[in-house]
Every structure is written in structure tokens, then in C-alpha cells.
Length: 277
Image 1 (cartoon, rainbow, N blue to C red):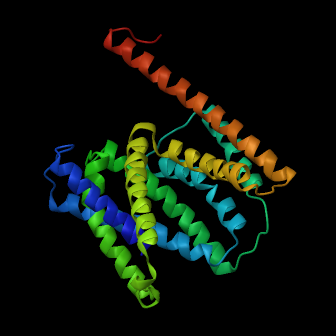
Image 2 (cartoon, rainbow, N blue to C red):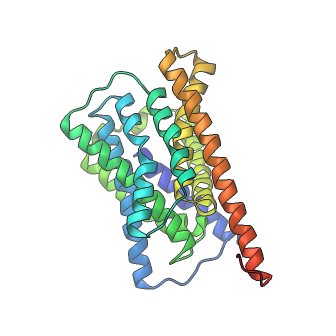
Image 3 (cartoon, rainbow, N blue to C red):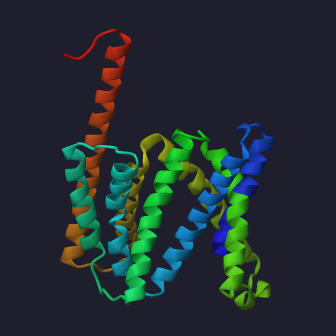
């Protein structure tokens, strides 16, 4: 139901921004609408599978497997879109992935079903990230706000349906939520809306692979914040993993900056009628 709340916040937020003329809507065909409906199913399924897998495996195991999302993202681009990355990009992924695994090192426990569901959730996360980028940069060419505007109502209905099937409605007691709880949920929903807008916009501008790397770095920064604010103890292996992830993230950022700078220079040369020798 929390997922439905987040989808509802995106629906309300984009409705308000549309009325304020912050963005405009494109005319979509029936096929385009079907594509967005399929994307909303993917979005909801990714969250549902992730939540189910968390109940079947330990958190360290779950986070370790999720650290492989960049690998699946690269595989999707290589297999589906025939994209090729430079050697430096591949090398920069290694410390980020291994670093997160070390940072999240702990009690590993998983059933066979849990292992399968965690892998499936990781694959779905990679597909969702790639699809989000493609919907904004090719094909439909939708902006972040319009994509959320069109997808969130469908995702909200799907999340409510999933909550009903899982029995969350039976366990939910609206009388247990006081004014403080209502305020917390409202702030949470507002943050979720802002996060989704920022995430979609960042995906459009930086690319799906960069988003998965940022997600890995985010896991490590979460650990760092827990150490600073709640004094959560960590071991030497975890500390080395944090340092390795941050170093890998910096290396990846430098490689990506060099690649984009090179592309801009080449485009300028082509526009000026100068070809590379």
C-alpha cells in the first residue's frame, strides 16, 4: 500500500504541475498507451518481486545480488541494442560492484526460491532502468513529468490490486494512524514524488548504466550515514568495501566524463566540416 501511496503522490503532483503549465502532453496513439501500460506493470512487478525476495533472503545477500544490476544493464545494452562500451568503462565497474559486496558483507542466507526471486528482481531492476531511459530518449520521447503523469495512475491501481491480493487491506487499520502518522506519510509521499521526478530526469540525462552505478554508491552512502548518525558498527571488510565503492564510483565518473567530452569534440569537428584522420 505504501507503493500505491507513492504512485498516488506522483499522480497528484503531476496533475498540479500540468495545471500550472509546467509541462505539456503529447498526442499518443493506442500503441503508445499500451507501451506505457506495459512499463507500469514492469515498474510495479519490480517493486513486488524485490519485496517478496527480501522476505526470503537476508538483507546482506539481497544487497550483494542487487549490486550486480550494472552487469545486467550492460548485458541488455549489448544484446538488445548492440551497444559497445570502452574497456575503461568495464574496468571501472569492477571496484563498484565488488565494493558494494564487501560493504554489505554479513550473514548470507537464502532459500532456492529466495535466490531465484532476488536474481529476478535484479534483472527486472536493470530492465526498468533501461526502459525508463529509452522511453525518454527514443521512441516516445516523453519528459520525466509526462512519463510519471501517464504511468502513475496505472501503477497506483496495480499496487492497490497487489495489496488486496496479499491481504494488506485486511491488516490495515486506518484508526491506528494519528495526526503525526498522517504527517509522516504525507512528507514521505512528497519526498517519493520528488525522488521519482529527479530519478527519471537523471536517467534521461546521464543514462541507465550511470543510474545503476549511482544506486550502488547510494547503498554505500546509506551505510556511511548509518555510521555517522546511529553509530552502526562495521568490520574491516565492510570499511574496505565502502572505500572501494567510492573509489570505483569516482573512476567511473571520470571515464564517463572523458567519453562524453570526446563525443562533444567529435560532433563539433563534424559540424565544422573537419573529419578525423
